Length: 333
Image (cartoon, rainbow, N blue to C red):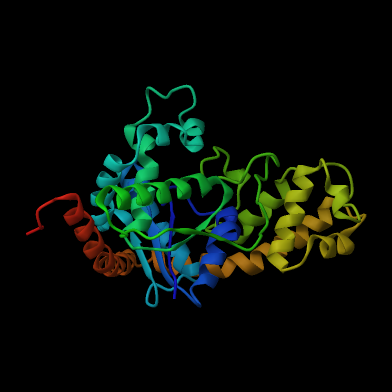
């Protein structure tokens, strides 16, 4: 069985885009792989966080993942900061990676913008920690989207340089795991922007903790255009908001876009949105209900994460111990 590592930021609330783009595929990967799922709270503090809120949202997102179908008994679910091997290996990788490599990371350029001198150094070396997250488990496959491909290439470059510098074949090559195509979920307020946790408008996204009334209200308020739904996908060209809602409906009902348009061609958005609300509620209401049950017992959630951390450390510590020995560190007491 391949060992798969994947992480998700614990800040904000996981939303429909996270679910369709990643989490539902993680659930499927559990059937035939050894999976390590991580709430990456070390990554979270590369930007300022409220400590109390960070702890609460780490529990919240753990509850959501379990409610979506992540099985913490058969696989590993934990919070990153609980396994010190991540930080230990990240420091080694800080010393292996080259400044020029990190300078070329497009995500850093995008996030730092014109304030590069003011952002934390953690944001700059973030990709080294990401590489450590994966290599600490000798994971060989990582689910990736287009925005993470460059970081995965860097992780392989770091491993190759480490192996070369110390004359070993210690860290294996990571292969990107290209997930099945899903709807690219965009903001409900602006079809040109991805649905995001960080959007200042809560009306822009469907959170996985939204109740049925909130889901209905957000969809009814979702931006559309005055034209009826077209007969074919070609008719959605230049209609970003319409295409977004059709894509969400297709994903929720397991249909192709062509089938959705065949059903609703010529219809206005009023009736279509009501059907979309029904589909979303049928799919997401059970997830919300289970998440709320888990959140009602925070001590039990903490136990799940702590147990996952112990299992994660049992894998990662020997690997990082050996990496430290190869570097020349004395054995840990």
